Amino acid sequence: MASTDLRGRDFITLMEFDREEIETILDTAFDLKRKLIRGEPHKLLDGKTLFMLFYNTSLRTRNSFEVGMQQLGGHAIFLQPGAVYTPALPGEEIAYTTERVSDVARVLSEMGHGIAIRIYGAKTGWMYGKGNLLIREFARWARIPVINMEDDMYHPCQALADLMVMIEKLGELRGKKFVMSWAYSGSVEKPLAVPQSAIIAASFFGMDITLAHPKGFDLDPNVLNFVEKNVKRYGGSFRVVHDMDEAFKDADVVYPKSWTVQPTDGSGPMDPEKAKELFEANKHWITTKEKMELTNGAIYMHCLPADRGMEVTDEVIDGPNSVVFEEAGNRLHAQKGLLALIL
Image (cartoon, rainbow, N blue to C red):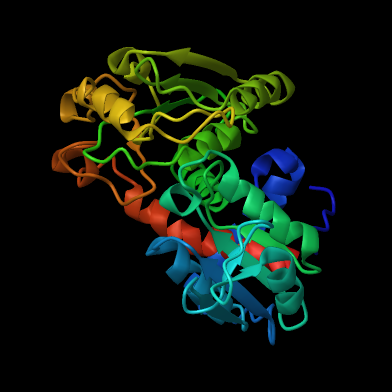
């Protein structure tokens, strides 16, 4: 592995990194995970501060970043819009309620060493790309690294943890069949960030990627084009199917996760009635023991929280092939590797 210096880099999507840089983050994450298990100190960020701005609720993301910074010797500060003046884009300010992103970014740059942001869904009016736009506005004005903790387009921190658990369970990923599948949920409020980042991540490692979803649940064509180009560069393959059983056949990894129906061209917000109609027509897209038997003894992945009884049965998510809790645990280690390198 060549020397790769990532200090000062923003981390908004894996599409802005190359394979060597991603491998450097993963190698660091695995090293720090081993150090933690052995009880070896690794205070690499002594005196460093990470500001965490959460527009949306969080269990895994908030705790993994806070614990990660503490274990690295630094400190994470939780900032919630409403408790502070809500950072807003130009033209969307409300007197004495909001503060322009450019001002917030420059103030925080004077006080800390990194800014991490989570924003998607209702907090963006379900306008695809608006959350990503706000994060990039922070990156434009901040003098310190900006980290995407999930927006309406990407969840790159989850993707790092996903890669870690696949490498731990499968070893060499080249040639392994990776299935990113839509699954039914009783709620249509599901961003596209996780499935898009999952197939982006897999495309760097020579995997045979199958994207499965009912018609009408298309992902961002820019993401699909990137994945198609990336598998040509790094090996593997990419195809889209509209049948869950077909997708699961001979899979080594299955990642069934709900996402909504949403225009990705900026033409308008999510239409909840249209989304609900399509969701209800596809209730049979659920991961069951019978579907898992179609696979090549695949591991079952999910970013959590999972909608039990809708996306997946208890028998599968609590079964021997499920790696969801190790996957969640790797959020801590993956983010520590990232933080150690960019801060």
